[in-house]
Length: 249
Length: 314
Ligand SMILES: Nc1ncnc2c1ncn2[C@@H]1O[C@H](COP(=O)(O)OP(=O)(O)OP(=O)(O)O)[C@@H](O)[C@H]1O
Ligand SMILES: [Mg+2]
Image (cartoon, rainbow over all chains, first blue to last red; front, side, top):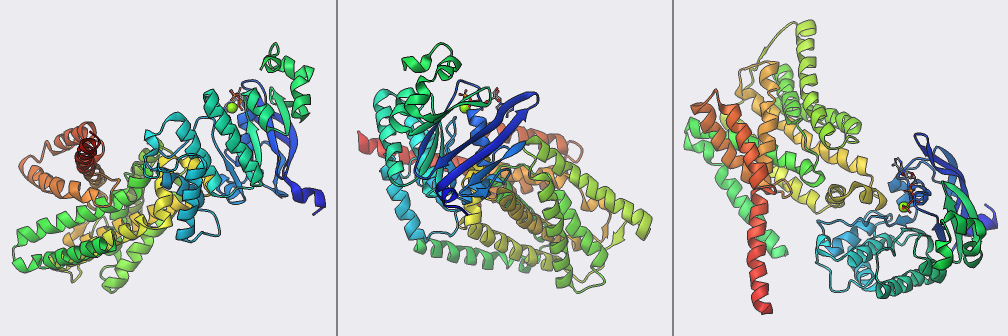
């Protein structure tokens, strides 16, 4: 293994997935370095969520390789990929409605190997509840949480496994300005922990504040890849976003 | 908590000791009724073990029950009884594992239909085998097992199924099944091998059902496929578990006891309209008690708890 591939958390090459005649992800390739926050941008329907689904094993790629910490995970079952250190949140928030907040977080860490001793697991759950701003909500049923609290809980569940790579699918969408500021700080603090993050986001303020680097997709293809400021001023990107929404934001 | 567990355990043991005395009453009718009650209690509880947390509705109860009963019909006279039970359990487990691996990817209504079809398939296989290979249409069950023996075996199995259910609920497997029931995609992303977890629990539940069939077989002196594979059992067990509430270990028994008594009464009084009444009861349950009797108890206790907190708050 070369020096480069050891710090490269995610490396994707020639990734492709079609639904019938629609090629949702087309010859996609990019890589993410250890500790980086990478933005995955693109207009609606450009294939961002599909790309995340391919990486986390919800969907099988038609072609291409996906390397997580150097290991090819393309086509592997989701649970195996999860155990290799990948966690994610979903565009439409998914929490376990019939369980309380503690159990939701416990679900995230109980099936990782090696198994944590019970006392240590409880301690980590406490820490995570506190960290995402749900301290004191231990026994509240997830179904009874507000929208932002559901998002917080989903993130806590994803973090419970101490992932090497975290995929966030529009985790900041639908938050009001003050919640957004809290959310941005929270994600930034994850970077300090050494978690590598791929972030799908339409909120440009958040992208500017968080992402070291961005790639932009349009109709399944990658049309830009580079430092955030450069990518957002790229002519092709502005055009893809129909009349420069990016430039305004 | 642990004192409460110990208390419950002692209570359960006492109940078990009391129930073990039923055959001593010397009343054949009560013994037969008690056997029916235990039979459906075990079947419904075993059904809930898998279907409660996963919310997969299985109509395969009859298939496994029948496999157990037929194992006894074929091997009962040849082998010692404990060995017959062991073989029945193993057969049930193997069938369940194969069925589980091939069907638990199906979701919702497809799974229901498949499990229903499975019963018919196994029944037809048995018929085909008996007619073409062994050249008999039915078999006599001559084993040295009394009604009291059947009762005690079922009682032991009842105790075992509750103990097992209690252990599973506190295990990682039990938690995994609950997460799967909530959201299978999330479960996978939490690192749960969902196929393994579902097949494991399906197999455990089916093995118990198979044992019930095996233990019950000596009750009939003559067995043929339509007796052993009576699909009514699947529906009755489903209704009982849903009435009681399959999301709790102690839920299905709350449905099994009253409905066994009711079915006993109805099938004796109205043998012809029995199925219609069964259907109506099913509709009533689904409309009025979506979470079963267990859910009703929970709701009552939380609303009274809610009132208390309200009073505290104001
Ligand atoms: N399971 C599926 N079956 C068929 N088509 C799909 C499926 N998933 C996605 N698509 C299609 O693939 C294309 C890309 O969808 P995708 O959800 O990846 O876009 P996106 O970039 O995440 O968009 P958005 O910003 O709206 O979330 C869309 O045209 C979508 O309709
Ligand atoms: Mg999307």
